[in-house]
Image 1 (cartoon, rainbow, N blue to C red):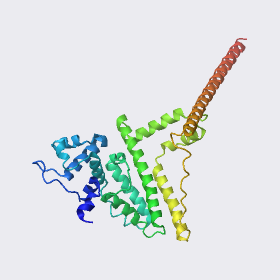
Image 2 (image 1 turned 90 degrees about the vertical axis):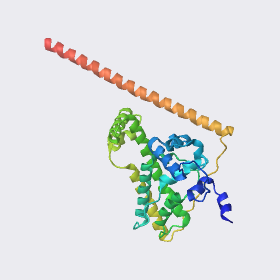
Image 3 (image 1 turned 45 degrees about the vertical axis):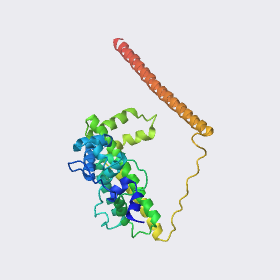
Image 4 (image 1 turned 135 degrees about the horizontal axis):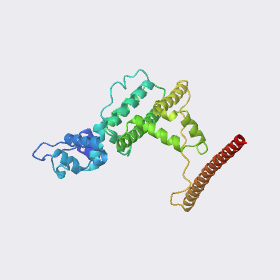
Length: 323
């Protein structure tokens, strides 16, 4: 297969990422390039978010017409893909130089979070399939390199990578959400933590949420520990246990495929079951609300009765004093 045939089989965005797409022969008088377009788009996304990126906004930032950009990047989806490739960059060599697989995956997760911190909009880029651009593949290769001496087979190594990727991306998603919210509220992370803890402590009662109330009373929501790091460490503990079993000669774990769905979303039986569940949940919430109101009223009656008894006792004391 010749080079032209190989190029035609690749989507243009992927071909651009690999540097094998045909560039326009003629362009605007002033120099314009794919690199400049992508850098401008990333600057916009870093400052205003991914939603602010459009062909017209990038063209305006560069001082060109929108049509000029289409000579280089023919679709916004291709531009987003190239932005992702640029923002992701290459993994640092320290990952592959890690002394063991656990330290390597920990470094990989840390460096990945650093990328998300530098370019939070990367979280908004949808995952549409297996990565197929150079930098994304380099990050996969870096993670797999630290597992090269493990007893895991190739499929298990991919599974381990996905495990750490999920935890890392989830932490980045939550962290970014908090950052956006804090900025809109004009709060520091510490102020936000205190405010959230106060709100939850006010709303959560031992009657309605007994187990959550115990956690709040223990001060867990105000602790400075990183719960995401705890999660990553426990994932690695599980992986370490599994690797030890494989090293001892245990066969690969059998992956059981999920049970087939009992019906399609449009199936009347499925719709009826979902509606029944929603109705049951509604009744449960209403019952819990009535229970809370009953407890509140009982406490108010108890308080009122105690107040009356104190008043009667005070009157008796006063009469006794006069007698």
